[in-house]
Image 1 (tube, one colour):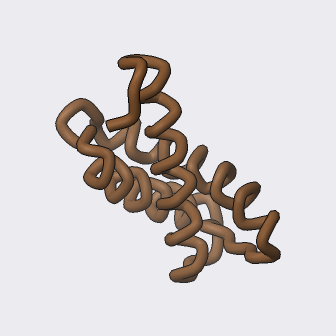
Image 2 (cartoon, rainbow, N blue to C red; image 1 turned 90 degrees about the horizontal axis):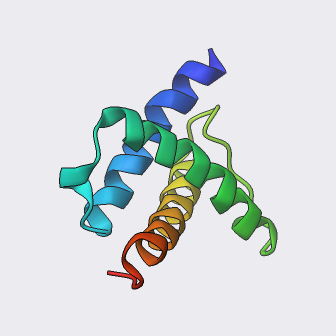
Length: 87
């Protein structure tokens, strides 16, 4: 059951991050889910340095925020690689 919640929360996190980074038009639902799940991993690594933890397998606001922040970082890295600058 945890993986279903991770897919849903990952999709929401990826969608929110794509709105913030102005990439919503170029991403579909599949890529929103992928970005959200990978962003959650990146966000948990970043949050681990500050002693904060959150998982998207068990829904919590902290986990969602960490996933969105990680997804924004991921999309920023993708923007630098693709365009040579962060939007």
